Image (tube, rainbow, N blue to C red):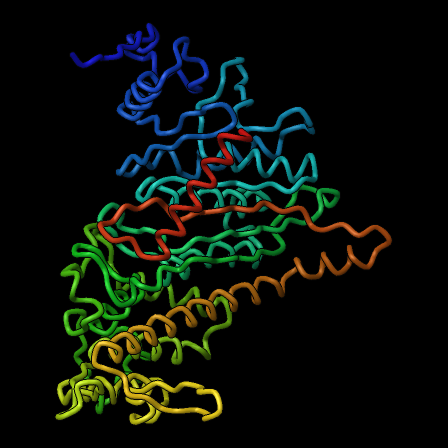
Length: 473
C-alpha cells in the first residue's frame, strides 16, 4: 500500500496563543515543513503577518487593511528607536531586536528597514533589502513600506520636515505604478517590471543620515501586456486612468489632445488592446480619475510638465494602433493593406505621433532589407506580418515612453545634494562614495498556460535568487 509519512506536532502550537508568541521559526523544537506551514497559518489567523526565519523576514499577504500595523504611530516608534539607538556594531539583522523587557520584538517590515538604516548610520556600510516572492505575495506594498520608512527616518518621521529629494522619492511611486503595474488574476496592483532603487544618504559624520539622492534601475518590463492580456486581467493602469479622466472631462491637456477630428467620446471598450481580456475595472473601490491626477501631479514634480502632452499623445496613439486592421489586396495574398474600417484609427495614431499616414501604414505593411550587392530593397508584409509589425511598434513605443519617464525621474533626483556630495567627496584626498540602501523588488513568479519570454526570464531569475539563499543564507 501507499506509505504515509507523519510528523510530530509541536506542543507550543497546541496552545491558543503559542504561535503568536513564536516570532522566529527557528524556535520551533521540531522543525519540518508541516510545522512551518502550521505556525504561519496560525499566526496569519491572528493577524501576525510577519515571521522571522533567522535573518530573513517572511510576510504573508493579509489581503485586508491593517491600519494599526502600518500607521504613523507604529512607523514613528521604529524611527524613534533608530534615532535613539547607540552605536552597536554587533547588531546586524532584524532578528536581533529585543524589547526593554528582554523579550524578542514582534517582527515587522519597519524592523528590516530600520536595520538597513542603522547599517548605513552606525557601520557606514551599504545595505540591500531584497523583496522576493510569487505574484500576489505583497512585494509591491512591502517595497513601498521600506521606501517610506527610509525617506521619513532622517526627517524625524514627519512629512512636513521632509526635504525635496525625500518627497521626490515617494512621488516616484505613483508614476512607476501607473506605467508599470497592472491587474492580474492574483493581484490588483501587480508590478509588471523589476526595479532596483538605490537610495543614497549623506555621510554619517554629518548626523543622522538623510536621503540626498536616488537612482532607479528597471528591467524586464512586460511589454507584451500592452497588446494582449489573459481574460480577467488588464493592461497597465495608466490606460484606464486616462480613459477615466477623459470620461470625467477633468484633464484639460487630454481634452486639448482629443480634438474634433479624432473621436472625442473614447471609452475603454473601444480599443482592441484593452477589451479582449473583458476586464475593465479594478475590484477595489478606487477612483481611477483621482489616480490619474495623482500620476500627473507626480510627473510635474519631476519636471515633466512640458512633456505631458507628448506622453499622453503617445499613450493614445498606442491604443489607436491596436484598432488598425489589415487585409490582403485583391490578387496578392502575400501583401497587406489597411482595412477601411481601420483607416480612422490609422489617421488618429499618425496625427498623435506626428507622422504622415502613408509612412505609418508603410511601416506596418512593408519591410526593408539590406541585400548584398543590391542595396536596400522593400518587401511586402503579409496580413499576419503586418499585424506583428503593428504590435511590435506599439510595444516599442510604450517601452520607450516608460524608459524616458524613468530617466527623467533619475535625472531630477540626481540634481539634488546626492550629486554634490559625491563631487565634494571625490574631490577630497580620500575618495568615499555615499552610503546607500538598495531596494530590489523582483517581479513575482507566474505560471501561465503560455508564459511570455519576459516571464520565463523572471521565473529563471527567481530560481537563481532562491539558489543564492540556499547557498549563502
